[in-house]
Image (cartoon, rainbow, N blue to C red; front, side):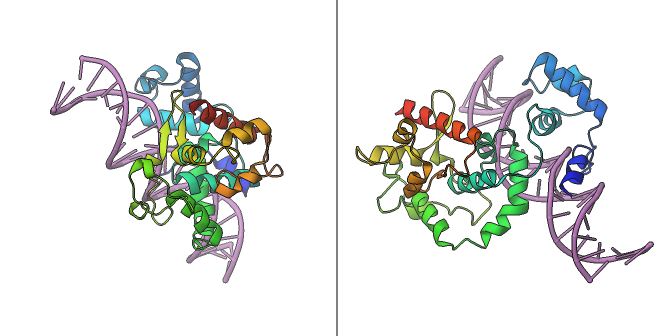
Length: 241
DNA sequence: AACTTATCCAACCGCCGCTAC
DNA sequence: AGTAGCGGCGGTTGGATAAGT
């Protein structure tokens, strides 16, 4: 079935729209190869396509772009999606950014088809509540004190389709989004505590990081690419601090 | 075999933030 | 300050197909 679905990909008409043909794909690909990404408003003209800029961009990002990973999600990818979703909410592009080869649309579809139902049943699960408390209330310590937001005033994660307020996210000089929660953990824990920087430099397992239940991983379920990716993020966090 | 239901996912829509003028 | 144009994002839809009856 998975194979069939993969074969189907890209050949389908939906939403009353017109399915992309092989010829159109080639035209778009040649155009991007020649002129590069961006300037999407010019792409239809340059490529000679009777498509709007958004369709061209979407087709490229979700289907034609190199290194797009096909097939079902691996277990470690699923676990990462779940954890990132706990942290970020429906920020599919951010989540997909931590999953090389996966598009935001893929992640979103996978979540909607597989995970949302599965996890909604676990809404009251203790572990989930713990994670949520950490995000919303900051566990046993008051958090978000620097942001002047009363924990109770924050919208719940998961209960609605709306995502976590973007006040949780900051962008550093390199343009990378950082989760304020992480920075606060770093700031509030005393020396000797378990910090992102410590993990990065001492090579501890993420499992130890479970006390904050953020991006916790074990070596067993952590492939090289996401480990490296997370290490990169940690470096960036450390640089910021 | 015929029909119904469930699942998957590509593509569209509307909105938002940013930038240039 | 207002606004138009753009890139980008998340929510949603509906067609294709598999699975079930």
